Length: 351
Image 1: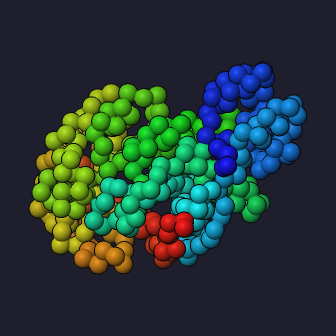
Image 2 (image 1 turned 45 degrees about the vertical axis):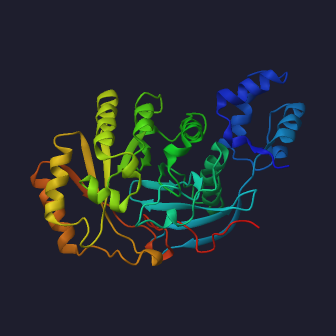
Image 3 (image 1 turned 90 degrees about the horizontal axis):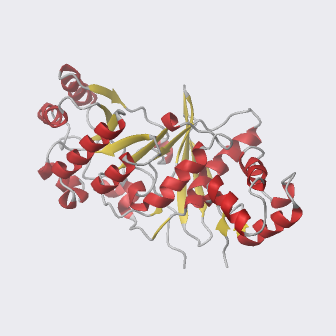
């Protein structure tokens, strides 16, 4: 029987569990330090913790539940890790190098049910959610890789934009965020963390009311219901009117700038008329529009990347309409690690 990952416990949950099993809450601090500061991979390596406590933890929780299957490195330094889960499923995690630090893109589900017509991640239907521990362990595996390189590098930023819809796995995603933010652990600050959603309006509202305080990005990709429903089937269930109402609630509750993600598809949603319509839709809301060049996916050959002139024209319309706008830099397109490309060509269900 597979054990749960100890990384799935927040510090408070770990302390409460130890207390319930006859140990002092204070031992959670030393276990936490061993996991996240000393980054032990075996309970025998953990110092300053009572042996009975370690035996109890080892009996119930595993430190390693992910196995590195393959690793690919891009010419730009991006690294894509393919991890095998205990049940045999495979997931992908991406390390990206930026001028401002090292960012890890984590996966939250095995497969994805959102089914965006331009995205590789939805080619395989969701089979299950990842546990919070499996999400945390992706970051730990990347950090351990950096530790082995001996350059003193650390993961500084997190984007929850890998395979799956994070808000469709809300509770596990939320516990993951609490673990990685802990100041005595990985200490990744909320301003350095971004969660992306395809537009689950009810969860956006719940997120706005939470204590998580991290950045939110919404995948919009079209300025009207007809076009958005054509390329994102979720819009049929949650149309723009409901989504924009949830966005307004988020902005009012948090007073944090929200990112609007917009993939540019040649001849589909990249015209200046689409830009004008998008500007009308967004109005004076406190948002930044992140324009994303389309990354090719073999199975979605009906889409092509927008011409550079079209990207610039789209950008120019939004800027002239007073919107904050940027164009996303690409990372790892040559190893299918860029936005919209995540899903391994080796990916298959365990027999």
